[in-house]
Length: 481
Ligand SMILES: [Zn+2]
Image 1 (cartoon, protein in one colour):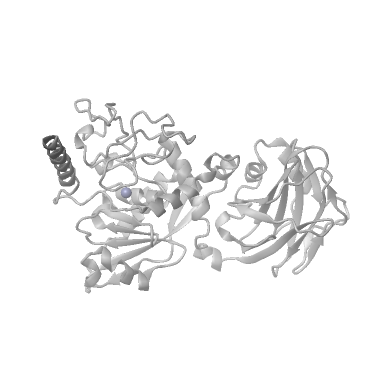
Image 2 (cartoon, rainbow, N blue to C red; image 1 turned 45 degrees about the horizontal axis):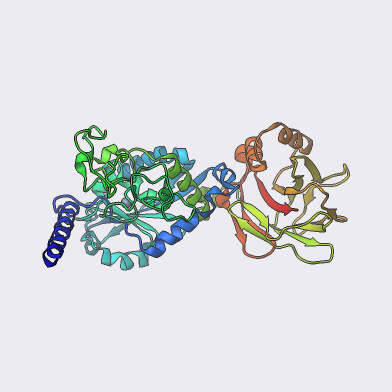
């Protein structure tokens, strides 16, 4: 008995040391130093909670997202050793190519910030706080580029929400895109650890713990279209230099099934960095959802602030006929009434232009059966122009009829007059939900999501900046029973 136990411990230690050695090869930097605490994992997972909700397609089809990137270039006191501007431009192009499928683009926010201080060129993670105190720019993606980070190519720090890159990591073809993947909530294909192997089994399309989630949704990287990956850094024999899986080597999971990981995935630890080229569909969806949820309030591009900008702000308020307010909360782009309303309920609303410029207002209602109703302007004599400070109040009230389901109200605030009849015809003709149809009809005339901010509260209060010809759609969903 005693003997067996000692043997077990010995084997355990042995495996431990083997993987430790494999992961800590002193000649090569680690693939990525991103570390997640349990809280980080919980928080990231919460961002995807609504993945399977009915809004999913609407969220994914929402508009293009632009991410401002601030580069911080660390050099010695003589200004030497920093990453070059041409490398930055090439890497931004590369990033734009890779994230094209997620409909996300990146641009440099202002000029790079040069930090000429040898204290920082001698890299240590312990120096992060003092580096950030002077240089961190709010509401942009901060990328700190070091001449060398000894043991790392790069990493993303969830706590400070910043990316740290070595020159090698910036130029090896994939580490930068990989760290940006972490910035958008992606885990490694081998799971939430850095050097360890996965907790995902090869057979993972079942619900082993009986919580109504397939194992692939909550083990490994939580993505079901990335197979279980035992960590390609530890198992280098699983793939060739030509970026294909190796047929001469097999690694089995604890159940004895052979791992067949993706070897070209950007979130893998394939040691041939040039092989990491792709994201899967689930990963793209996650990037997009995380971007919409967490990255939509980034800095408005500088040119937008200086050229032709027009401040826009307003509010919309709903109340029942007895005066009770109808609270609305916001889910990304969509606003939803917090309560359900019933056939026979009577309500009214008002909308106010609180900006300094006049705004045109158009209101459409889409009923549960998809029929469009022109709410405002309804009569020829109604003028949709709201002057600065003016409030439009519905004269009378709306009574919910007996067609139950999802009611959608769409308020369009516009800088210019819209041909309302034409708009209604176009809406009848196009396919898809209201957001998608508006997108198809107005395209770039719609105000990008990252130019609008909303205040917390029961009413809808928004503010932002318009460029030429822009239209801000505010869509509110009501559950009508
Ligand atoms: Zn990583």
